[in-house]
Image (cartoon, rainbow, N blue to C red; front, side, top):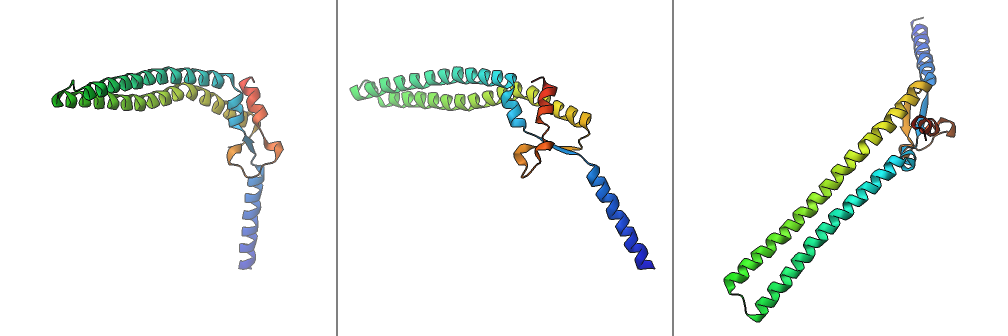
Length: 168
């Protein structure tokens, strides 16, 4: 009798879990495709590219100046116009300029990354809010990004709903 009660209890437990799991609604979205279609992302990319070109132009100018200075110093050394002390001072000056270029390159990378974050974060937030709204309006407990799914039924793709929520 006791085994029958335990078996019946376990059976009831599994039935309840199965019912709860089957009641859950899952969906997926291709957020990368949605982001690629958004005009805001295209504008942000254009702004980032313009900033990068501007900074690269400045960096290239610094490199060209260093190359000219190096050539001028090399010519003076070859002509015997600089004393050993002057040669050391010029060498130190050129090394300092080279260090400044390296520092500028690092700062340029950091500046571009910060600008990327500044421009794209509001867009990511907008897409995430649209996904959340679609989930709440359509009763989804979970929405996955398509990039990490191994298999999904086409009917569970909520990308169209998210696009509609974003006005695309």
